[in-house]
Length: 466
Image (cartoon, helix red, strand yellow):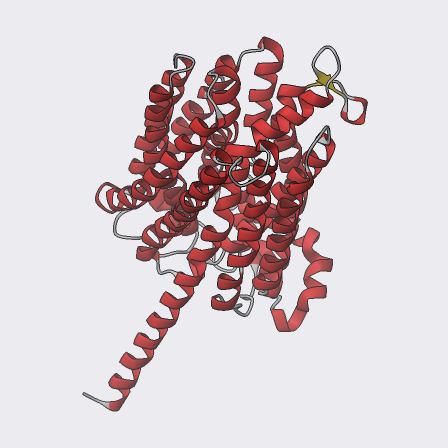
């Protein structure tokens, strides 16, 4: 064996080792921010902010932010919708800056710690401070997708095409593991708050704030492990070559909005990628609305206590770890697209069953939570990895900014539809079943996407099974 062959083999092994090190660091951002999604969005903040709003409401049950009459029970859903509108304005800009400069880590750090600080500030949400709660929720919910878009844009850089389903699924599994662990601690504190010498409300505020502390602490790991790469030269619709050395952060910021316009033009050159993105935006809108509104549905419509809701979400977290890994294996056998479509069929059944769920019946609610857990992580992880194959090289952060608009419970159409359905009918059952349209429409659109052709047209290698 020649020295050149030995050297090439050693370099390949070292490259694979460095890639695995980055992958392990990358997993930890899911580990860091998933506690926010679980403890804050899914469990505590919806019912708690709703109770604060009802404490501040007038005799007819309305609060009046900026003079606008809003039913207290709809405030949380409307706040989620406002946050995504603001995220729409910010995320494409930060994605363009990241791709133009190649400096993703500073943007990841800034957005992550803004979100973590806003979440920690929820400790001060009490009394009738519903505006404070809504404001902090908006800040955190804008910061989360901004940071997640940058984080997701690392996936094509740190994983080969045939690795991405596995790497993406493991990231989600890490996130659900941390969510389950912290939720156990939350359950201990909440259910035994008297023995800890705190009120129930104080226990909830501690649980909310601890999610922000957790988010901030574990963000250190990916910031240490991930590395920035020189921005790829850009041509065609994306504009002239603009590397980090050539443009710098300031040039990226100045040209961010111009680059956004170029990105939108460029996305029209990849119609199949756009078709997948549209399908994802629709069905994931439904998924995230179910997640963010489940605790309100359980507490207000089904009359379940907070402890029951925590146990149900804990069940979701535990089963989501197994579900994400299992669906990753199914994708290797049956293909990623088919596996996602099958999971959407399960989501449709979940909503139908949810409409008929009897009140004050925890066992039925736990059964529904188990079904959600088995498909939740996998449907999201496989969607992320599938989209990564359809993104042109050098434009990952910009494309993932568009992708991230619908991720992590931040879609605005789903919460808006949910809030309007409740405002018009006063029934959370009608609100939950109104989400069927998102899953049905998303499934139909996804079934029409020719994924192999989309990957080829993006200039990427096609995996053996997709």
